[in-house]
Length: 317
Length: 317
View 1 (spheres, rainbow over the protein chains, first blue to last red):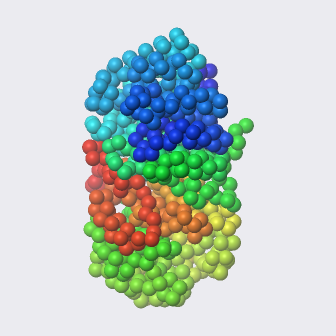
View 2 (cartoon, rainbow over the protein chains, first blue to last red; view 1 turned 135 degrees about the vertical axis):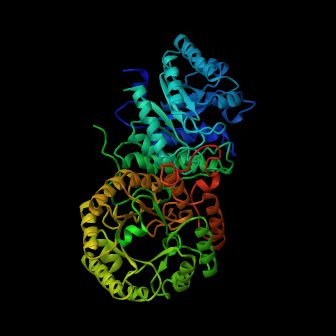
């Protein structure tokens, strides 16, 4: 089995909690390192094992990720699978020196967004994936390299996105040595039909290997899109606690798909998650206290799961 | 074509806005009749044609529906398809005297809920449907009789619900003369898999005739469940403006599926709704002003639809 297949087994659903990365990207509050570690501890106790915990970005511009080393250390202590963004060579050079378990590179689905946002062409972004893979191979062969295709389901600049292009770029990233690729509805443009269709293409591309779907709830489609993704063979889904995250192009908009609601969805569809929804409430309390200026979303935490009916998937045997 | 087939054509999606009925059932605020009519006018201008506008219930116990006559008059002036709950013979006797276009009867999916909530057996509830049909036939043959199966996807008292029982009760209601039947996830227990499976059975039962799916967002599954329903042949979906409604069994919980988000979902899935999302914002403003003590939900209204990408379904030809 490939190393990605070990971390993200194809016979079950893996939920990646990205609140401590994407959820903090444009947050108003600055949770302390202590609060972030308490969040991680409580969420690990609730059964969550896969996280994005920060970004290797200049601390001057992104102070919310300045404590990446402390977060990685906490992650190791808790034995979670930790991932962090490495958006350029400098970030990757720093990352390979740490105990981070997964380095996440980003390639834009459209040339317009790539140039405007990353100041490089898509081909240069794919090349960077190859460079990160080479660094990893030389210095930290146990790490995963993840390549995410941003704006894969709609672009804030060029609007509609051609799925053929997304699959072509994902294939190029795999070709460059990425262990796993992801497709992101970065600005929440898609409905379940488009998500299902793109996941079906990705499954064809990846075969028995996992791929990631990264969803935003900007237009309320987060859970529906996750359901369509699961129906179309996706087995790794990104979501954030309380739907933290927002959208830089739509001030006041909702953020990532809501982690708690996606746990309930997965269980309802027959995929056991190993996550305790009651204990997730504790995590939410910690995060809400640490981020008083940010809005938390979702429905499940208000009502709790049905008390008198079967809703949990049968445990994997 | 049957009369239900004329009002709810099988070749398109019809969204029923139930905010003025289910949305007010346990609301904290008491919107004035003027505000409710302004809501109806603005929503009609946005292209919404199908509504539940109230209940025929004793005004002493349900003052929020005391103005049902004024609401029906407004509905006629606006030429909308208006529906109202008729939960007992007295309600139906009153309803047939008015210009209401659809009388909605309710049958519980479980005997336990029927006895506890309606103080009658399920068979007696089905008999009542027959009586309402007879009244309609004798006095107001142009009206529709709608029979909704409450707790069809999970019951606050007995938990799991047998889909066979739901289909049996729906068939009995059709047998009793109902023009259209509905299935309601009254307490928001279901995920998309269960909703899709029940809708597929209902489609088999109803053939080319429409049936209604009534969804709550209590656990965040509203939009995903609507998507599954559409995938499984449902073409009539209930939702409420801003997700008004709540759940009597889970204080603080979210309410009905969010109308605005379901409009976006439908369009994204290729079903044209004829509804102008921009103008729905005006309706929301009116309702929020009139219901200051209630929480409004949803995501679409925050971000608006994508500005630079195709998201609307092609118009029906």
